[in-house]
Length: 301
Image (cartoon, rainbow, N blue to C red):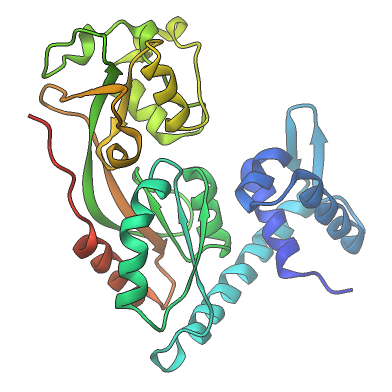
């Protein structure tokens, strides 16, 4: 049985993350499925690619060389796939589009109808994952484009980042809290600021904006979604930052929204893809449609 491209992608992901669980998350598969494919790959090679350690894995000398060659094969396959996909100016498979969780449920309802209307020959498969996993999927070719809220890493294969728009942050509190705006974030009680769990870039941005790195012992709460945090805020169990694009879905009659004092924290949302991808003109067009279709939320005063 020949080595499959999927197995090579799994091996490359495991080499990057050095951990079966994180590699499986990046590949959007279960950990047993990824482990099974790596074991089958090692059987085909007749030697281990990874040394299993208590804290994760590390490449064997053979595995290091294998992954180097596999990555070159993956990149060639991705280039060939993109060339065939765009041949003759028409797309013959769905574009694989990934978004971070603090963007997908809020922006997709606005941009997806515009994308399908403006690009009728294109179709999309949508996936949601954290930034690290999306970047890894771009690198290994399992995603075509990703919408993220941070700068892509400088190391690794070159990525093109097209800025879309700046998304300002606001403060959400319960209705019963007396808050004078615009809010000075350094005056908030650190122990009352509710955060997303580890791995979300919006968590890191909130920590930076509120300077919570000065109070590491105050951060006990961590949620899997902004919707979960809003439920706690509505019940008076803390306060949180929200991105403006989330307000249509998350802001309701149970919470109060407050502007933040200048310079207000924000994030730049960007569309990212591999520089070597010949479909760059298509991705530029997608970026234009997103910019044109997005209805800007009302700013707080």
